[in-house]
Image 1 (cartoon, rainbow, N blue to C red):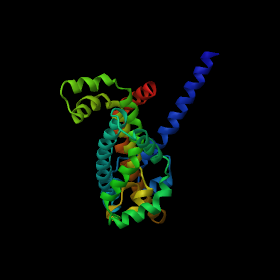
Image 2 (tube, one colour; image 1 turned 45 degrees about the horizontal axis):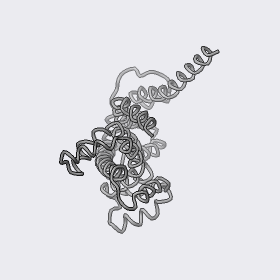
Image 3 (cartoon, rainbow, N blue to C red; image 1 turned 60 degrees about the vertical axis):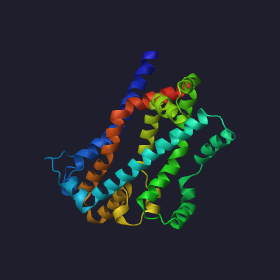
Image 4 (cartoon, helix red, strand yellow; image 1 turned 90 degrees about the horizontal axis):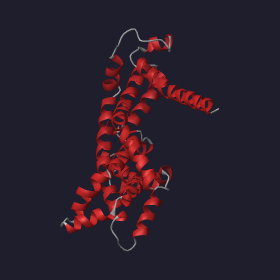
Length: 275
């Protein structure tokens, strides 16, 4: 009976993998086919590796501009989020001060606010700060929405570290900043990598905030650009460039996860065991 159950689980996992992989494979090889070939035979293989769709998507559909905007906003937002979240988590987990628990619950409360519910007051606030239609403003919003989750994850890692490490650092003459930067931060590396990957995925694929805060097409991010292409392709029926744009959007996500997936799993396991 145990072998039958294991066999069923094994087949179910393979079926799940195929369901996840086959659409991506279909998308990739159709990105090398012309729209005429796609309409004639959607499941046919490309006769040749034609990169014309990628050139059209990058230049004519301005995917290159959208891609660079997303890379800039996500890169800056991610660095600021990791630094601020690690500092806040260290203070909440290691240092002792009045109102510590209150600040902890404030971060938990930040995770309970739906993005859609905050759009109207957020737009009013950013408008009063003259940061509507600004990549800097969008980066600040990404940081604000990402910090609560990041702090709570890193808090669990810092709490699990032995307090004797901080005491030894203080005895050796290290300042609070040196203790954080040279002792605690390297030890929490699995948690930082996990937070970085999850935040990258969320920021890279984020659509709603960018749609509301970015008006100028030259400043819009990649998800908005692809959505614009979907609308225009319904009239022009040029699906090859659209598939190419979607492949370009997938490349950073697949690259980062393929490099860091072991660290992500390690961080999640450590967090679960230590929690």
